[in-house]
Length: 71
Image (cartoon, rainbow, N blue to C red):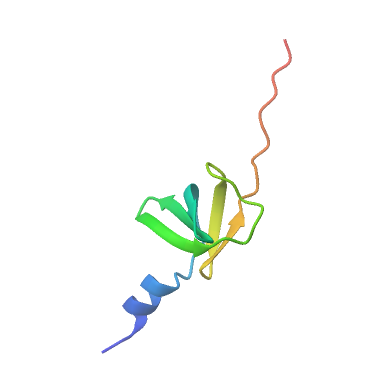
């Protein structure tokens, strides 16, 4: 029996993008397509911030540059 499926659930090999839904007791509740994921609060992150989960840790996601149109 392989442990790969369990390893993928506990520590995915890819980054997961999400949005902070709630901060409670030093934990971030992050809404992702797969559901809510809890991660430790590293500080400096607020509700509604976009984050990237890597190795169980949340990081503020890099903001995409806004498109500018000159009129």
